[in-house]
Image (cartoon, rainbow, N blue to C red; front, side, top):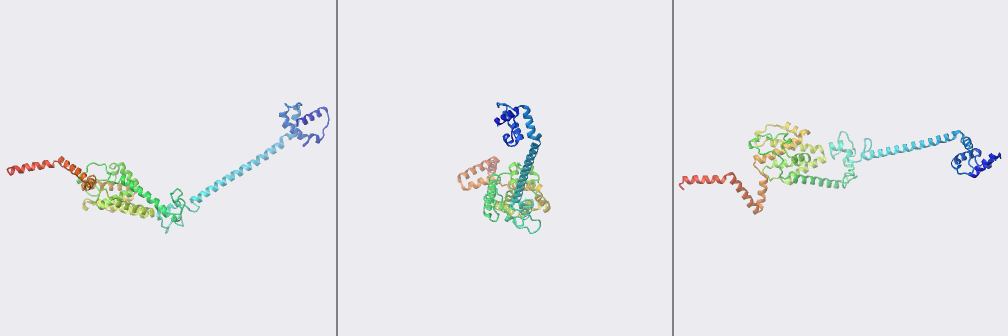
Length: 387
Protein backbone atom coordinates (compact mmCIF):
# COMPACT_ATOMS: atom_id res chain seq x y z
CA UNK A 1 0.00 0.00 0.00
CA UNK A 2 2.82 2.35 0.80
CA UNK A 3 4.45 1.61 -2.58
CA UNK A 4 1.21 2.31 -4.46
CA UNK A 5 0.71 5.56 -2.64
CA UNK A 6 4.30 6.58 -3.32
CA UNK A 7 3.80 5.76 -7.00
CA UNK A 8 0.59 7.78 -7.05
CA UNK A 9 2.27 10.78 -5.49
CA UNK A 10 5.18 10.48 -7.89
CA UNK A 11 2.89 10.38 -10.91
CA UNK A 12 0.92 13.36 -9.73
CA UNK A 13 4.08 15.27 -9.04
CA UNK A 14 5.37 14.45 -12.52
CA UNK A 15 2.00 15.10 -14.22
CA UNK A 16 1.52 11.49 -15.38
CA UNK A 17 -2.21 10.51 -15.61
CA UNK A 18 -3.38 7.23 -13.92
CA UNK A 19 -6.29 4.97 -14.84
CA UNK A 20 -8.92 3.62 -12.47
CA UNK A 21 -7.40 0.12 -12.60
CA UNK A 22 -4.08 1.53 -11.49
CA UNK A 23 -5.60 3.46 -8.61
CA UNK A 24 -7.46 0.39 -7.31
CA UNK A 25 -10.98 -0.32 -6.10
CA UNK A 26 -13.01 2.74 -5.28
CA UNK A 27 -11.10 4.97 -7.59
CA UNK A 28 -9.61 8.17 -6.33
CA UNK A 29 -12.05 8.37 -3.42
CA UNK A 30 -11.09 4.90 -2.24
CA UNK A 31 -7.46 5.67 -2.53
CA UNK A 32 -7.94 8.95 -0.72
CA UNK A 33 -9.81 7.17 2.05
CA UNK A 34 -7.08 4.58 2.35
CA UNK A 35 -4.55 7.33 2.34
CA UNK A 36 -6.37 9.11 5.15
CA UNK A 37 -6.65 5.83 7.07
CA UNK A 38 -3.09 4.62 6.69
CA UNK A 39 -0.79 7.47 5.81
CA UNK A 40 -1.75 9.52 8.86
CA UNK A 41 -0.03 6.79 10.85
CA UNK A 42 2.45 5.32 8.37
CA UNK A 43 3.48 8.41 6.43
CA UNK A 44 6.26 9.28 8.89
CA UNK A 45 7.72 5.82 8.29
CA UNK A 46 7.33 5.93 4.49
CA UNK A 47 10.26 6.90 2.35
CA UNK A 48 7.87 9.10 0.32
CA UNK A 49 5.57 10.78 2.85
CA UNK A 50 2.39 12.33 1.52
CA UNK A 51 2.00 16.10 1.71
CA UNK A 52 -0.35 17.40 4.38
CA UNK A 53 -2.49 19.30 1.85
CA UNK A 54 -3.03 16.13 -0.18
CA UNK A 55 -4.07 14.16 2.85
CA UNK A 56 -6.57 16.85 3.83
CA UNK A 57 -7.98 17.04 0.29
CA UNK A 58 -8.12 13.26 -0.02
CA UNK A 59 -9.90 12.90 3.30
CA UNK A 60 -12.35 15.62 2.33
CA UNK A 61 -13.03 14.05 -1.06
CA UNK A 62 -13.15 10.44 0.16
CA UNK A 63 -15.27 10.98 3.27
CA UNK A 64 -17.77 13.23 1.59
CA UNK A 65 -17.62 15.79 4.39
CA UNK A 66 -18.53 13.10 7.00
CA UNK A 67 -22.17 12.64 5.94
CA UNK A 68 -21.89 8.96 5.03
CA UNK A 69 -20.06 8.22 8.25
CA UNK A 70 -22.70 10.04 10.29
CA UNK A 71 -25.44 8.00 8.60
CA UNK A 72 -23.50 4.83 9.23
CA UNK A 73 -22.98 5.73 12.88
CA UNK A 74 -26.65 6.64 13.26
CA UNK A 75 -27.65 3.28 11.76
CA UNK A 76 -25.31 1.44 14.14
CA UNK A 77 -26.65 3.46 17.09
CA UNK A 78 -30.23 2.62 16.19
CA UNK A 79 -29.38 -1.05 15.83
CA UNK A 80 -27.62 -1.13 19.21
CA UNK A 81 -30.56 0.64 20.87
CA UNK A 82 -32.99 -1.86 19.40
CA UNK A 83 -30.84 -4.73 20.69
CA UNK A 84 -30.58 -3.20 24.16
CA UNK A 85 -34.35 -2.64 24.26
CA UNK A 86 -34.92 -6.19 23.18
CA UNK A 87 -32.61 -7.45 25.94
CA UNK A 88 -34.42 -5.27 28.49
CA UNK A 89 -37.77 -6.61 27.32
CA UNK A 90 -36.46 -10.16 27.54
CA UNK A 91 -35.17 -9.47 31.06
CA UNK A 92 -38.52 -8.02 32.12
CA UNK A 93 -40.29 -11.04 30.66
CA UNK A 94 -37.96 -13.35 32.59
CA UNK A 95 -38.60 -11.45 35.82
CA UNK A 96 -42.35 -11.53 35.24
CA UNK A 97 -42.23 -15.23 34.48
CA UNK A 98 -40.20 -15.85 37.65
CA UNK A 99 -42.64 -13.82 39.72
CA UNK A 100 -45.53 -15.65 38.15
CA UNK A 101 -43.84 -18.95 38.90
CA UNK A 102 -43.31 -17.93 42.50
CA UNK A 103 -46.94 -16.90 42.83
CA UNK A 104 -48.09 -20.16 41.39
CA UNK A 105 -45.62 -22.02 43.55
CA UNK A 106 -46.53 -20.22 46.76
CA UNK A 107 -50.17 -19.78 46.00
CA UNK A 108 -50.55 -16.05 45.42
CA UNK A 109 -53.78 -14.16 45.59
CA UNK A 110 -54.86 -15.19 42.13
CA UNK A 111 -52.84 -18.38 41.69
CA UNK A 112 -53.72 -21.89 42.79
CA UNK A 113 -53.10 -22.92 46.38
CA UNK A 114 -50.44 -25.56 46.72
CA UNK A 115 -48.84 -25.47 50.18
CA UNK A 116 -50.22 -25.77 53.68
CA UNK A 117 -49.25 -22.24 54.73
CA UNK A 118 -51.51 -20.85 52.00
CA UNK A 119 -54.54 -22.23 53.86
CA UNK A 120 -53.75 -21.03 57.38
CA UNK A 121 -56.48 -18.40 57.29
CA UNK A 122 -59.37 -18.80 57.31
CA UNK A 123 -59.52 -22.55 56.61
CA UNK A 124 -57.12 -24.00 59.20
CA UNK A 125 -57.63 -21.24 61.77
CA UNK A 126 -61.41 -21.66 61.84
CA UNK A 127 -61.93 -25.29 60.84
CA UNK A 128 -58.63 -27.10 61.40
CA UNK A 129 -58.27 -30.24 59.33
CA UNK A 130 -62.06 -30.47 58.87
CA UNK A 131 -63.24 -29.22 55.43
CA UNK A 132 -65.03 -25.84 55.76
CA UNK A 133 -68.79 -26.18 55.91
CA UNK A 134 -69.63 -22.54 55.15
CA UNK A 135 -68.07 -19.11 54.94
CA UNK A 136 -64.99 -18.01 52.99
CA UNK A 137 -62.74 -20.77 51.66
CA UNK A 138 -59.15 -20.33 50.49
CA UNK A 139 -58.44 -24.00 49.68
CA UNK A 140 -61.41 -25.74 48.02
CA UNK A 141 -59.64 -29.12 48.08
CA UNK A 142 -59.22 -29.00 51.86
CA UNK A 143 -56.19 -28.60 54.11
CA UNK A 144 -55.26 -32.27 53.98
CA UNK A 145 -54.74 -32.07 50.21
CA UNK A 146 -52.11 -29.35 50.56
CA UNK A 147 -48.35 -29.94 50.64
CA UNK A 148 -46.17 -29.43 53.66
CA UNK A 149 -43.45 -26.73 53.49
CA UNK A 150 -40.19 -27.92 51.99
CA UNK A 151 -38.34 -27.10 55.21
CA UNK A 152 -40.49 -29.55 57.21
CA UNK A 153 -38.37 -32.60 58.12
CA UNK A 154 -39.27 -36.00 56.61
CA UNK A 155 -42.36 -34.64 54.83
CA UNK A 156 -41.21 -31.50 52.99
CA UNK A 157 -43.13 -30.91 49.76
CA UNK A 158 -45.43 -33.91 50.25
CA UNK A 159 -49.24 -33.83 50.61
CA UNK A 160 -50.47 -34.15 54.17
CA UNK A 161 -52.56 -37.24 53.37
CA UNK A 162 -49.58 -39.12 51.97
CA UNK A 163 -47.16 -38.04 54.72
CA UNK A 164 -49.41 -38.41 57.77
CA UNK A 165 -47.07 -40.86 59.54
CA UNK A 166 -43.88 -38.74 59.25
CA UNK A 167 -45.78 -35.61 60.28
CA UNK A 168 -47.24 -37.35 63.34
CA UNK A 169 -43.78 -38.66 64.25
CA UNK A 170 -42.13 -35.25 64.03
CA UNK A 171 -44.90 -33.51 66.00
CA UNK A 172 -44.87 -36.25 68.62
CA UNK A 173 -41.12 -35.89 69.16
CA UNK A 174 -41.41 -32.10 69.42
CA UNK A 175 -44.24 -32.27 71.98
CA UNK A 176 -42.45 -34.95 74.00
CA UNK A 177 -39.21 -32.96 74.16
CA UNK A 178 -41.14 -29.84 75.15
CA UNK A 179 -43.01 -31.59 77.95
CA UNK A 180 -39.94 -33.39 79.33
CA UNK A 181 -37.95 -30.14 79.28
CA UNK A 182 -40.76 -28.33 81.14
CA UNK A 183 -41.14 -31.14 83.64
CA UNK A 184 -37.52 -31.29 84.75
CA UNK A 185 -36.80 -27.56 84.51
CA UNK A 186 -40.01 -25.96 85.81
CA UNK A 187 -42.64 -28.47 86.90
CA UNK A 188 -40.70 -30.89 89.08
CA UNK A 189 -41.72 -29.41 92.41
CA UNK A 190 -39.96 -26.08 91.81
CA UNK A 191 -41.39 -23.11 93.68
CA UNK A 192 -43.01 -20.46 91.54
CA UNK A 193 -43.81 -17.92 94.25
CA UNK A 194 -41.23 -15.56 95.73
CA UNK A 195 -43.40 -14.80 98.76
CA UNK A 196 -42.17 -15.60 102.22
CA UNK A 197 -44.40 -16.92 104.96
CA UNK A 198 -48.14 -16.60 104.36
CA UNK A 199 -50.52 -16.57 107.32
CA UNK A 200 -53.01 -19.43 107.27
CA UNK A 201 -55.82 -17.01 108.01
CA UNK A 202 -55.11 -15.13 104.77
CA UNK A 203 -56.94 -17.77 102.75
CA UNK A 204 -60.44 -16.29 102.72
CA UNK A 205 -61.75 -17.56 99.39
CA UNK A 206 -61.72 -16.08 95.88
CA UNK A 207 -58.05 -17.04 95.50
CA UNK A 208 -56.94 -14.77 98.34
CA UNK A 209 -54.20 -13.75 99.15
CA UNK A 210 -53.10 -13.92 95.47
CA UNK A 211 -54.40 -11.22 93.14
CA UNK A 212 -54.74 -11.31 89.36
CA UNK A 213 -51.77 -9.01 88.77
CA UNK A 214 -49.54 -10.52 91.45
CA UNK A 215 -47.48 -12.18 88.73
CA UNK A 216 -45.80 -8.82 88.15
CA UNK A 217 -43.95 -8.99 91.47
CA UNK A 218 -44.56 -12.27 93.33
CA UNK A 219 -43.50 -14.82 90.69
CA UNK A 220 -39.97 -15.87 89.79
CA UNK A 221 -38.57 -15.14 86.35
CA UNK A 222 -38.56 -18.83 85.49
CA UNK A 223 -42.25 -19.06 86.34
CA UNK A 224 -43.04 -16.12 84.03
CA UNK A 225 -41.18 -17.78 81.15
CA UNK A 226 -43.06 -20.97 81.93
CA UNK A 227 -46.41 -19.19 81.57
CA UNK A 228 -45.41 -17.82 78.17
CA UNK A 229 -43.97 -20.99 76.64
CA UNK A 230 -45.91 -23.85 78.30
CA UNK A 231 -49.34 -22.63 79.46
CA UNK A 232 -50.96 -26.00 78.67
CA UNK A 233 -48.44 -27.80 80.91
CA UNK A 234 -49.06 -25.37 83.79
CA UNK A 235 -52.83 -25.79 83.53
CA UNK A 236 -52.43 -29.57 83.36
CA UNK A 237 -50.44 -29.57 86.60
CA UNK A 238 -53.03 -27.33 88.28
CA UNK A 239 -55.81 -29.72 87.24
CA UNK A 240 -53.98 -32.72 88.73
CA UNK A 241 -53.11 -30.93 92.00
CA UNK A 242 -56.61 -29.51 92.44
CA UNK A 243 -58.30 -32.82 91.73
CA UNK A 244 -56.09 -34.72 94.20
CA UNK A 245 -55.06 -32.46 97.11
CA UNK A 246 -53.60 -35.34 99.09
CA UNK A 247 -51.85 -36.94 96.13
CA UNK A 248 -48.18 -37.33 95.41
CA UNK A 249 -46.04 -34.22 94.99
CA UNK A 250 -44.71 -33.40 92.51
CA UNK A 251 -47.79 -34.44 90.59
CA UNK A 252 -47.70 -37.63 88.58
CA UNK A 253 -45.94 -37.15 85.27
CA UNK A 254 -48.32 -39.46 83.40
CA UNK A 255 -51.45 -37.57 84.47
CA UNK A 256 -49.97 -34.19 83.72
CA UNK A 257 -48.63 -35.35 80.37
CA UNK A 258 -52.01 -36.81 79.38
CA UNK A 259 -53.83 -33.52 79.96
CA UNK A 260 -51.14 -31.58 78.09
CA UNK A 261 -51.35 -34.03 75.18
CA UNK A 262 -55.12 -33.56 74.94
CA UNK A 263 -54.71 -29.77 74.82
CA UNK A 264 -52.08 -29.96 72.06
CA UNK A 265 -53.95 -32.49 69.92
CA UNK A 266 -57.17 -30.50 70.03
CA UNK A 267 -55.33 -27.32 69.06
CA UNK A 268 -53.58 -29.05 66.15
CA UNK A 269 -56.71 -30.74 64.81
CA UNK A 270 -59.15 -27.87 65.30
CA UNK A 271 -57.93 -24.69 66.95
CA UNK A 272 -61.37 -23.29 67.99
CA UNK A 273 -62.23 -26.56 69.74
CA UNK A 274 -58.84 -26.70 71.47
CA UNK A 275 -59.03 -23.09 72.66
CA UNK A 276 -62.60 -23.60 73.88
CA UNK A 277 -61.59 -26.65 75.92
CA UNK A 278 -58.57 -24.82 77.33
CA UNK A 279 -60.69 -21.85 78.42
CA UNK A 280 -63.32 -24.17 79.93
CA UNK A 281 -60.71 -25.99 82.05
CA UNK A 282 -59.15 -22.66 83.02
CA UNK A 283 -62.47 -21.22 84.24
CA UNK A 284 -63.37 -24.51 85.97
CA UNK A 285 -60.12 -24.49 87.94
CA UNK A 286 -60.63 -20.87 88.94
CA UNK A 287 -64.16 -21.59 90.20
CA UNK A 288 -63.03 -24.70 92.13
CA UNK A 289 -60.09 -22.96 93.82
CA UNK A 290 -62.18 -19.86 94.59
CA UNK A 291 -64.24 -22.08 96.93
CA UNK A 292 -61.20 -22.98 99.01
CA UNK A 293 -60.83 -23.46 101.92
CA UNK A 294 -64.64 -23.49 102.30
CA UNK A 295 -67.33 -23.13 99.61
CA UNK A 296 -69.16 -20.46 101.64
CA UNK A 297 -66.13 -18.16 101.37
CA UNK A 298 -66.48 -17.79 97.59
CA UNK A 299 -68.15 -14.59 96.45
CA UNK A 300 -67.33 -14.66 92.75
CA UNK A 301 -69.41 -16.01 89.90
CA UNK A 302 -68.95 -17.36 86.40
CA UNK A 303 -68.86 -14.22 84.25
CA UNK A 304 -65.86 -12.35 85.77
CA UNK A 305 -63.82 -15.53 85.91
CA UNK A 306 -64.68 -16.24 82.28
CA UNK A 307 -63.57 -12.75 81.25
CA UNK A 308 -60.23 -13.22 83.02
CA UNK A 309 -59.65 -16.47 81.16
CA UNK A 310 -60.78 -15.23 77.73
CA UNK A 311 -59.26 -11.75 77.48
CA UNK A 312 -55.76 -12.00 75.95
CA UNK A 313 -54.44 -9.32 78.31
CA UNK A 314 -55.55 -11.18 81.45
CA UNK A 315 -55.30 -14.82 80.37
CA UNK A 316 -51.65 -15.49 81.30
CA UNK A 317 -51.92 -13.40 84.48
CA UNK A 318 -55.00 -15.36 85.47
CA UNK A 319 -53.20 -18.66 84.91
CA UNK A 320 -50.20 -17.43 86.93
CA UNK A 321 -52.53 -16.42 89.78
CA UNK A 322 -54.12 -19.85 89.74
CA UNK A 323 -50.81 -21.73 89.80
CA UNK A 324 -49.39 -19.56 92.59
CA UNK A 325 -52.53 -19.95 94.72
CA UNK A 326 -52.46 -23.75 94.47
CA UNK A 327 -48.82 -23.80 95.53
CA UNK A 328 -49.33 -21.47 98.52
CA UNK A 329 -52.55 -23.20 99.59
CA UNK A 330 -50.88 -26.60 99.78
CA UNK A 331 -47.81 -25.25 101.58
CA UNK A 332 -49.33 -22.88 104.15
CA UNK A 333 -52.92 -24.07 104.58
CA UNK A 334 -52.67 -27.82 104.06
CA UNK A 335 -49.14 -27.67 105.55
CA UNK A 336 -47.65 -29.85 102.86
CA UNK A 337 -43.90 -29.65 102.33
CA UNK A 338 -42.87 -31.22 99.00
CA UNK A 339 -39.22 -31.49 100.02
CA UNK A 340 -40.05 -33.22 103.31
CA UNK A 341 -42.50 -35.54 101.52
CA UNK A 342 -39.89 -36.47 98.94
CA UNK A 343 -37.37 -37.18 101.72
CA UNK A 344 -39.95 -39.28 103.58
CA UNK A 345 -40.72 -41.27 100.46
CA UNK A 346 -37.03 -41.98 99.96
CA UNK A 347 -36.68 -42.90 103.64
CA UNK A 348 -39.37 -45.55 103.29
CA UNK A 349 -37.21 -47.27 100.67
CA UNK A 350 -33.77 -46.91 102.30
CA UNK A 351 -33.03 -47.51 106.04
CA UNK A 352 -30.04 -45.16 105.99
CA UNK A 353 -32.18 -42.32 104.69
CA UNK A 354 -34.81 -43.19 107.32
CA UNK A 355 -32.23 -42.84 110.11
CA UNK A 356 -31.13 -39.48 108.72
CA UNK A 357 -34.75 -38.35 108.47
CA UNK A 358 -35.50 -39.35 112.07
CA UNK A 359 -32.40 -37.46 113.23
CA UNK A 360 -33.57 -34.31 111.45
CA UNK A 361 -37.04 -34.61 112.99
CA UNK A 362 -35.56 -35.08 116.45
CA UNK A 363 -33.34 -32.02 116.09
CA UNK A 364 -36.30 -29.96 114.92
CA UNK A 365 -38.39 -31.08 117.90
CA UNK A 366 -35.58 -30.22 120.31
CA UNK A 367 -35.25 -26.80 118.73
CA UNK A 368 -38.99 -26.19 119.14
CA UNK A 369 -38.84 -27.11 122.86
CA UNK A 370 -40.84 -30.33 122.87
CA UNK A 371 -38.41 -32.24 125.09
CA UNK A 372 -38.04 -29.28 127.45
CA UNK A 373 -41.76 -29.24 127.96
CA UNK A 374 -41.80 -32.96 128.75
CA UNK A 375 -39.08 -32.54 131.39
CA UNK A 376 -40.99 -29.72 133.09
CA UNK A 377 -44.18 -31.77 132.97
CA UNK A 378 -42.38 -34.73 134.56
CA UNK A 379 -40.92 -32.57 137.35
CA UNK A 380 -44.33 -31.07 138.18
CA UNK A 381 -45.99 -34.45 138.36
CA UNK A 382 -43.11 -35.81 140.45
CA UNK A 383 -43.51 -33.07 143.03
CA UNK A 384 -47.26 -33.69 143.25
CA UNK A 385 -46.77 -37.42 143.82
CA UNK A 386 -44.02 -36.82 146.32
CA UNK A 387 -41.23 -38.24 144.26
